[in-house]
Length: 178
Image (cartoon, rainbow, N blue to C red; front, side, top):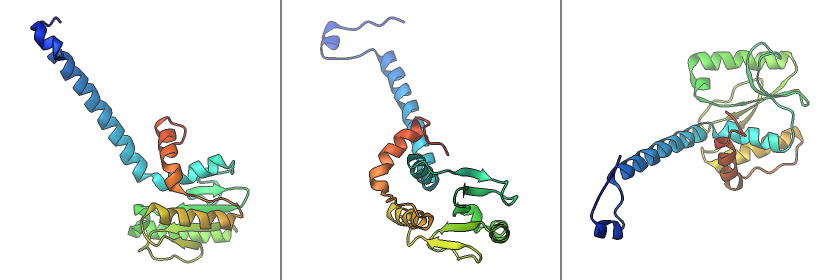
């Protein structure tokens, strides 16, 4: 490809129109990819934040464990014989609620302490410890995690306002996964 123009246009900074289109297309692709990462990050933020805090403090964690009760536990802490479930949309469905009741009973039968972090408007189930968020803010999530770590006997203060930029960077680099 070749391009020619008047000298005065080059002197004022005009660029090759083909190169400008290509640069704009590359920037648009990069922007779309970054927006996709942001959406995924925001959607999965509670799980990413928990995993980051656990990783940074060298706490043993098994994700999506099915060995303990035969149903998937989102997070199982073997050194504490404790499971953590963070509420998600599935838990609000009819099938999801039934499944979670069974999960609560199985944990109780196996002497696994089950802790649930619930959304503000979510009903508290039986046979587990519930930490109910007062709203959907990151501060409310921080409070729920701080209570959770207190229950574990771990002295940790979660402050996502200080962690979110670092966590996003680690997420994009693949150091923390969903």
